[in-house]
Image (cartoon, rainbow, N blue to C red; front, side, top):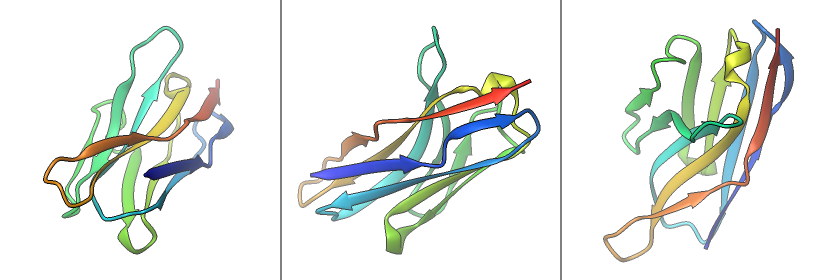
Length: 120
């Protein structure tokens, strides 16, 4: 099993920055994609950013130029640097990884989420 633990959320004023971290632990074999998703009250969960095993990244249009995702494979950790935060970035941010053992199929794992609140 793989466990994900996020940290770094909190309350920040608009224009401020936060850095989220997510560490994968347990019996780790192969992690493919690592990503961050968010869910605001009354809204569906949405993709924020993902980074693939080769380093290719994808971002939601709403965060391009403000957020940066990165990963440290040696530490099984993914980061999300969030700059120029806006009140509309307020949400619970959850980490996701695609992992597999010896079978060719990947399993999605989710963290418990960390609250990010941006005040105006």
